[in-house]
Each structure stands twice: as structure tokens, then as C-alpha cells.
Image 1: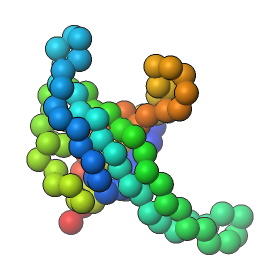
Image 2 (image 1 turned 90 degrees about the vertical axis):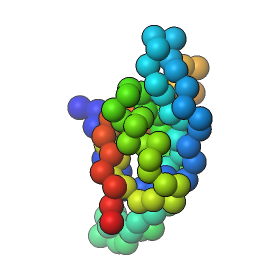
Image 3 (image 1 turned 45 degrees about the vertical axis):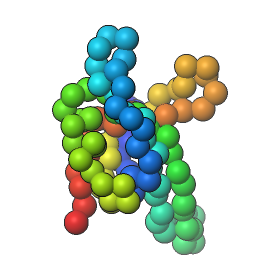
Image 4 (image 1 turned 180 degrees about the horizontal axis):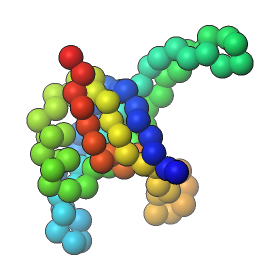
Length: 97
């Protein structure tokens, strides 16, 4: 199963664009910071991840989410077209706070 749920902060949002199929799309950057336990020891985790949202419903929500806002993002990971790296495809978002 390829399912990712990430609590993160919206740090960058590109301009609304349209796919060749005519669907609205947004390129985003998310930042996550937390502390987790790995092998019995605490570990600080900090990362930025590139994300993409496609479709009218999800892009409508994300265009209204203020930069710097915390939210819980759900979706899946997919390889970039050139096969180098990956991107988080967002299919759901729930603002926090």
C-alpha cells in the first residue's frame, strides 16, 4: 500500500496551473518537524518535501490555506518523470488549529 499521512506546514505554493487534461494543479512545498523514537532512542526529524495536488476539490482547499499554516496532508508517493526522486501527491488536507 502506498499511503502517506504527514503533519506539516505549508511553506511554498506555486501558481495555479492546468494539466494537459485540463485539471487544476498546484505545486507545493511542505515542511515537517517532529521527534520520533527509533530503536528506543529519540530522534529529531526535519524535512521538506515537494508535493503536488491535482483536481478542483483539493486545489480549492489548498489555495485558501495560508502559507505557514499547519495541516495534516494525506496522499501517496510517486516517482518524478525523470525517475530521479519522488513527490508527495496530496489527495486530502485537514487544517490544524
